[in-house]
Image (cartoon, rainbow, N blue to C red; front, side, top):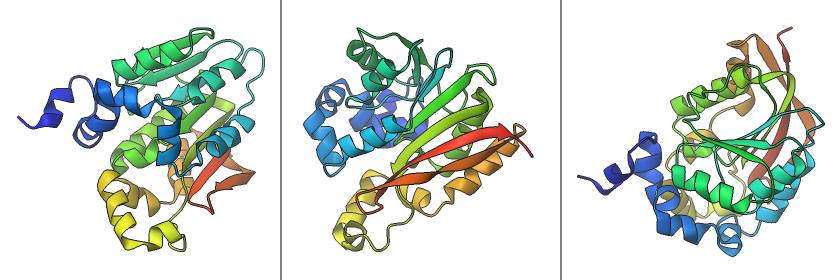
Length: 239
């Protein structure tokens, strides 16, 4: 039996096979949730990325919000503090959900175990959805399913934020440094494919399946010379 197969219980195959060491092993969960570690992984940009995300996340009274999968660091408790009626969060890992609960003991958090490709929420129930470095860790087909599910559960008039790697950074010094690009492609096997996809096109195709359309709200935030991005979208009924 391959080592990753020990982590397959209830989680997507790609998560267990390629990311067990980062998200499913209890020792790694403890290790990576230290702020200096996650900041180093993002080349010192975590605070900027989080601030840019939170600046676009403004739920009002009576509005519901979903964080699509858990993340390391301070983002989840920060989102929860800005959500007046409790933040919903889902993940395929029970250990990740337990970590999120421990970090939000003073704020309402509604945690549920789900696969992002097949959400158990009803349609049109959320006003805000946050995706923070999720899409690049999925194969293309899983990304399409996840975006479709997100557009299904967010109601017309809602907003969602995507914090991710930017478009193909072929002029960025990190990308041009071949040894680093090869290492990153090995650690993040689905990132090269994500770099070559048109995110807006994928979103519009996903929205159309549910009779909706999406509109990018400018300006977007370009972080670390475009290596990362924070983008907000508005959802409406199809024209």
